[in-house]
Image (cartoon, rainbow, N blue to C red; front, side, top):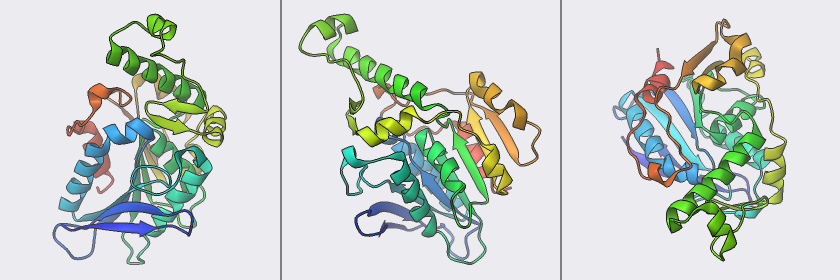
Length: 268
């Protein structure tokens, strides 16, 4: 198993990723693109992506996990980023996996990374064979509200003071967009795109011949009611819910067992 830092992307849109090869060498069974979520959720799920990459390597698979432009270790300014730019980044990362040897390419994403993967699959010249979407963001305004609520909770936890008292002091400022949420800056373009992200649909990817496994909490199952009998669609009910916006999730190296099973099931 080898790890290599890859730098890719067009000039002015460079990115950094970690490419992990199979433990046993030889031709890979599959290649995986691991699409990360946004901001603190990316930080707090980093261990999961590392563990997934290591397990895939033991299954004779290669993987690329990467930071979108303007995030993580990739260059670029936070305030200049957008969903449309990150969608292009996903496609550029996908090109890193196209070696022409016939190995299937599978994308895995969590949170906003899953939503970006779903949308990018509609534009890819040669789409992935499968998508594994773990808790995709299905409605942008709801997601923004959750970010703001998470921001408030973290300040309350930090100062150990109720939110209304924080607002009355000089320690608390009501979150808003564009602005800083959970330590990351969301600029105007990204804020506008998130507010306009509504009713995310899986059916267009299925029509492109992409098999989709979507994992959501029980209360979101109804969003996919018309697809439950589709032969290329699998809906998984998440058994262990983790709030990845919470600092209590920071640094966890425990991968939900059903998440790892879902990823590995694409190899069957």
